[in-house]
Length: 117
Length: 107
Figure 1 (tube, rainbow over the protein chains, first blue to last red):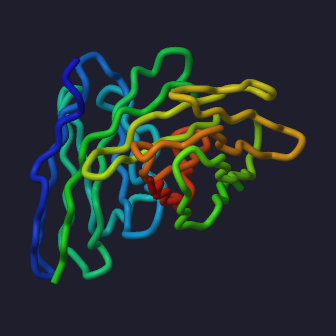
Figure 2: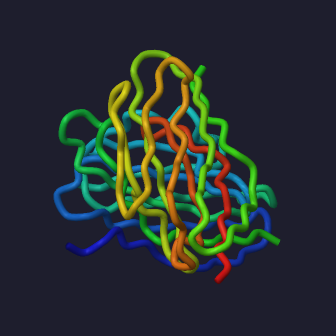
């Protein structure tokens, strides 16, 4: 099966600019996640979608970050305006969700490395 | 609250050495526990999982046992290979990841 696709792979922007990341999950996976991974740390969950509804966005900085999942398939994550501390790898993951989402392993994309200067 | 504490790295071992990477957790309820691995230049991928107490997850010679009494899920392998060089992440459900442990295996 095709894996989770993310684009772009790399992005360099100046602070206060905006940026958007795109994710296409594995076909048939109902649940989609966005994570932020700062260098030297583990992934931190930003937002979880079940189909096209938000399940958990408690750790999403909503003053500058937004995300949507159109038609329950592709998703975009946007940052506007970007800050220096947003420099990180942004990971998208999907899971089948069978048996309860807590049991289903994640399938990760290769991530987008964002550098804010 | 929920959290994962993972053994600090980096870890360097000789080929065929025994590996242990410690992971302990704090959780409410009955979480599922996972080990993910990130090989150089690749994305995170599932290594193994356990969904209830006393379950043992295993894959590629790696094992981890879900110990509720000690709130631990330590990763072990009896004989590491150079190809095991990677960063290993312990995770609680899909929401809480450890900081990762970098493993380098030298011939």
